[in-house]
Image: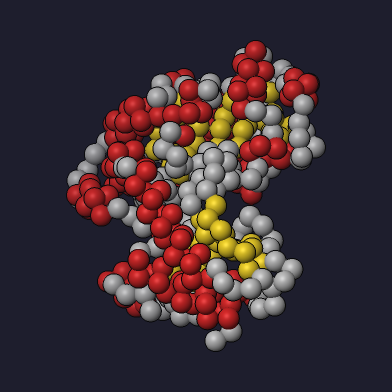
Length: 377
Ligand SMILES: *Cc1c(COP(=O)(O)O)cnc(C)c1O
């Protein structure tokens, strides 16, 4: 059983608390909010403020942390991608802003690598944009990007995401080509922190707008996002966003959420990343130690600069494996009490434990249950 006052609140509605060993997965709760953030939100919730004033002040904090000219607290990264598209299409022109998602009279093509098509790209299309795809899904040549850019191009989109990024042209090359044609580059790096250095990296490399999630590794309010970039484009995003009555109005961020994000991101950048990595590595090592002798299962700690940005204990179900299949294992972990959600998105023959959302006692439960399920007792 998951315990604590939070567990009781959910149980009173008949909802089972879970253990999230999959990282900051939105569907499994995102991340645990920092105590300091809860306190700041609690205070902010009881005091009234002009939302535009608050958004501008929060934007300055984001600009400072990211090294961008300006910033904005969006409604998740998904909401921020809609604002990115609105900004590059309609700019700050109210007549155009009001017309969206009808893109008449606007540049409305977003160039995107085929290898970067992903479930969230529908957010870009929500503004009436259309995609012009480049590359064949495995790789892309610079001339394909050159060829795709035309007088109707609103932006080039670029995705930083585990296992996908490197199938595209290198980011700096994309920036160089797009900027030579005066086309902005908009970036989704929602889950690409830590490393904390990534909060500055893409802006420094020439991105015009970059999006990060506030409710994932940053441990801010689950519904928030961090949008940063060029002054004029952020100004346009601000203009299209709630509380203004344009396409972003459906993606309201509350005053206490804005305060919560500001508090969370400041705490996040001040944390000791090496200590964090050591902690996650030692937690992963416990998983490895508990499962290493099970025949047919390969278990390793993965941690690299592109795909596993923080340490994960990755289990590979090899040809010699005789126990429950990878999918049966995942399902059996979910079917137990408490339900345990493992990381399952990257490879069809792998499952992983991401310690990000686990307390020590929860890790113990995960390990015990994994041994029960894998060893069949
Ligand atoms: C999580 C994620 C999103 C959506 O972020 P939210 O903050 O949950 O709205 C968008 N793009 C990518 C690559 C993501 O990983």
